[in-house]
Amino acid sequence: MSSKCFLNPGGWYFGGGEGFVETLLGPCIAIVVWFPSARMGGICHFQLPGSRRVAEHARQLDGRYGYDAWVWLKQQARVQALRMEEAEVKLFGGARSLTGAASQRSTDIGRQNIVFVEQLLAEAGVKVVGRDLGGEGCRYLRFDLATGAVWVRRGGALTVRAKEGAGK
Figure 1 (tube, rainbow, N blue to C red):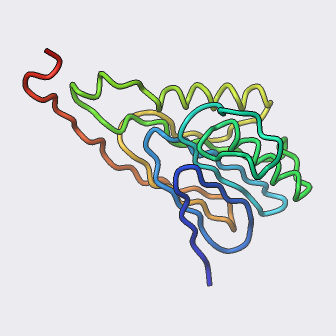
Figure 2 (figure 1 turned 135 degrees about the vertical axis):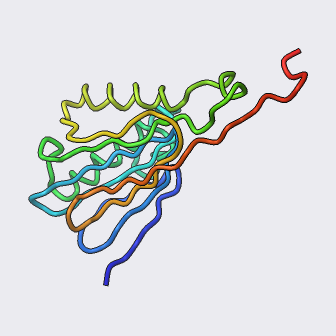
């Protein structure tokens, strides 16, 4: 019997065996790492690039921030005696969740997350074997812990209309 785990924003998971890890992304990013030889992998779901503070211990890492989530994934791999150079890494998310005139006033967090994660992994020397980044709407991900496969189902963006008289 397989198990299923759902990751909320700021969540992370590392393990193997039968089961799935699922999450729902908009502008957030999911980093999926898979170690084929060990048949183990991990996933994180971060909301914002960077980190607000320096963590002295793993308990102080905050999965809402991309840098902290990446550090946690690397630590979990190290605990299992796995090398990140052997991982298959996939990236998902970074979409605009809102469309329309009112959405133009907000900052594009999804774009910032994409730039951040691609730079982070390039600096780490990790090869990204798959990506589904940007665009509009949401993505529902299912990560298979037995095979490393990731399925993506897309949803549309919400349209936001500016209120009459707004901005005056």
